[in-house]
Each structure stands twice: as C-alpha cells, then as structure tokens.
Image (cartoon, rainbow over all chains, first blue to last red; front, side, top):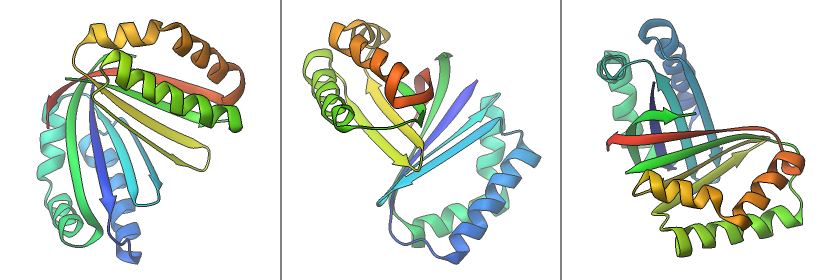
Length: 92
Length: 92
C-alpha cells in the first residue's frame, strides 16, 4: 500500500476551498480508488494523508483534470507552500 | 529516507503530556538522528510524522527506555487509539 503525505502552510482558505476540498475527496474515493484519507489542520499548518493500492492509482489521480485545476488554485491562492511525499508503507 | 506516520484519537492531554512530548522530540533529534518532525492536532485527531535515514534508526528510537514509557502512557492515558505506519519515501 502507498501513502501520499501532503504538508502545507496555509495562506487563506475561502468558501471555494472547502467546497473543492470536499469534491476532491469524493472524486478520489469514487473514481480513483482512494483507500483512506485523513486531513488535520492547526493554525497555518495542514497535513493530509491519502492511501492507495498502487503507484498507478496515485499517478491517475494526480493527472485528473479537476484535480489539476484544484492543485493550481492551491498553489496560487490557498497555500503559501506545500510539499508532497509518495511513500510505500512497509509496516503497519 | 523513511517516515513514521502516527495517527491518534486523543482522549485527554494533560500537562505531563506536553512536557513528555517536548522531551521525546528533543531525544529523537539529539540521540536517535531524527531528521524532521511535524505534529498537527485538530479536535481529537492528531497526526505526527517523523523522518529517519534508516529503518535501524526507527527501531532504536522505538526501543529507547524513556520512549517506551511514553508509549505506555500514551496507550493508558492520552490516546483512545492510535496507529503507526512505517513508510519508505519513494518520491518527493
């Protein structure tokens, strides 16, 4: 199993952010086989972790057109900075 | 590089928790070569991610006597439940 760790410094989250975040979560689960998702925010720090069966699932999800638009808005508007780490889970 | 993802449902965090959490962080960096650490809490959800050079570093840290005591207090007192996932970072 694979995990994608998203770490971000939040700039400003508006109403559109919460709508799109919800939509992205639904899309990841329903269309791309996301196995689990957790997101926790405190002050200007956000961590979100999604879980996937294969690297191909992660690539497909990354390239989804709606998701790409959301990524671009994240970069331009909602986040000061963010990083993404793709991990293979070797022990639970 | 390896990441350890700690996910928890918080029961109740007391003064001792914050003191020991700070001590554990110092110990992980100073004695066990922890490379990075981030912890974010929201409501009763907590995610903490630590980063390590090798699996051996993670094993050594897990077995540290002070850390084992902290783990036991975590189980008994501070957390309703928690999980730990050991991951290899394959792409940043």
